[in-house]
Image (cartoon, rainbow, N blue to C red; front, side, top):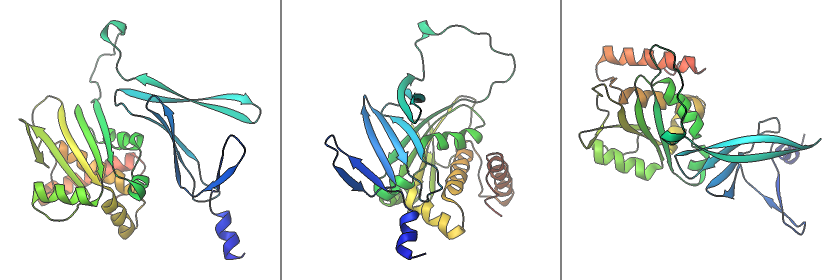
Length: 261
């Protein structure tokens, strides 16, 4: 098969059509559609003709959850609707329920900040994936902000907090007594508060160098950072082996291979 024909089959073709029927060809791997009221619809297009079209709803506020619903409009038409639902209801609106007795799972309050543009933004993981990875490594109640950054900010933070003049894959900050401490141990019984900073271009390079999928490497670093937040460390060999085993078990439960194999 000619190379040009082969390339044409392997790419998604996007045509934008205006009200007068005029078409404009768009070259893109991801479309962001602003719906108003802080709502956005994100479409990630498959790189191959047999790939999946991923549709994600997003919104400006952290206190609301976007909900997607599909309704048939005709035999060959589906209507996609995006509604917003608040995470927390006012106390007077909440109805009391009887909860089962026993230990309740730890609660994660998660915020995701994407301080990236262009290709780094396209490579950044989705919020729902980050939540899934972080929740799997959660051992206690926590309020965590995951910030996705580019190389410049990653280098600045690593230099300012660790004295190392390069961008690293993940930085972990625990907040205690009004100060941010990188990779500090977490003590006490109250909710843990901390940040994870992931440098997207560094993670992309490492995944390629190590022969891993980008998703698997991001998942590993989120789990690794969450364990750091909760007091695990790897400075001493015995602690490192224990932490590595815990990471491997958590990632295995998520469907990922042993990152240290």
